[in-house]
Length: 64
Image (cartoon, rainbow, N blue to C red; front, side, top):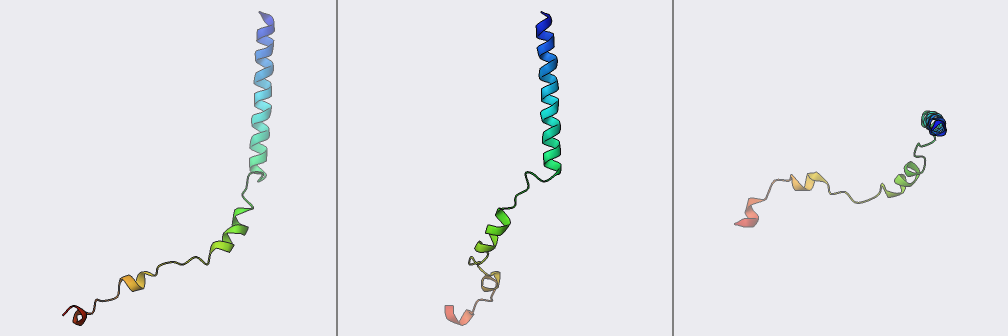
């Protein structure tokens, strides 16, 4: 029975070590996205509908 307590203590210690390593890596920027901003500039030239055409006044003479 004492081996279970020892294994439980060891597993808790290992879990704490991995948690601390994860926190340190997040703070150092290990998971920052460095790829997407460089690719995003390639897709900035997509056509965007201008809202100015939609808001133009309707010519009433066309309908008469």
